[in-house]
Length: 364
Image 1: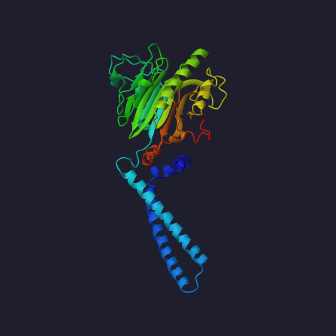
Image 2: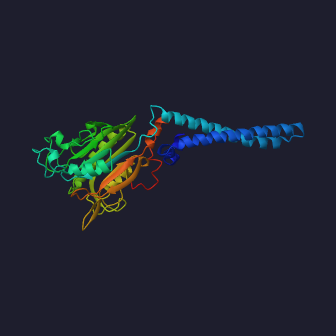
Image 3: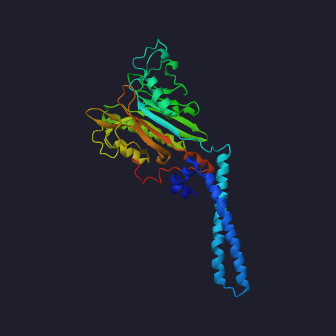
């Protein structure tokens, strides 16, 4: 069962989760059971007739095996589908919980031009554009932001976003930088400071989706680093990822602006100050980078800076980019955490699609 889920789960399971096909399958299965049972009864009558005359054992076997096997298969299928339906309708496993929609944007100063002595409702801020585009129109559940440029003394009400918990922030002590995460009110969120390191701008939050745990990281790596600083960042980032993996989450997702200046992820990364170091690191630890188009486009350049990294690419759907909002110059990268993650509760398995799908091109 474990092997079948790993090989065919990404194709078969969405049939049960994305559409109400299981009701139709149950009806068809019941109908097929009735048909095959009638066929089996007719075969018995025919066998009895042959026995009364000059029966051939081989003919009897060939006649009886077909309907019997078919009927047995339908019986098993009917039982399995019934169990799945009952489990999905019980309180422990929601029948259609929906995907978790997440995104990342580089804000380059979230509160630029804002007068903190004036109420936020009485002035424009980038948060207005974030609410209109990312909340009202696209309905993202998790909004990750890098380069917030916030300080620790910012009032909480200045960052309020209707429908979301107060943001979880990691601010830089000096100018610029900083990362933060907005999480919808309906999703449990725990700031995992135990996974964070003071020398890198990486924020870790544990998201609770029913009985599933997703570790969600938001990162920012500033440009202009020396070779020594690049190695230090990768080492620190790697230590945090290792600690996160050792925590055994159901899925690991990391988004952010890594300033890895390439056009496509499979390029040679010749213009990146990290070269292939970060690319090779992700390959070595079986992490997959899923974005494969430039996220910052100017008149003179196009660079892939904003990344989505995961250990479970089979869980991530609808990868795409949105155009910049306001006067920003970074596209918004986003994806959906698929609904199939919930069905694994039924089988009580810890399945990660990363390894069986490694041979496929997920832009590692």
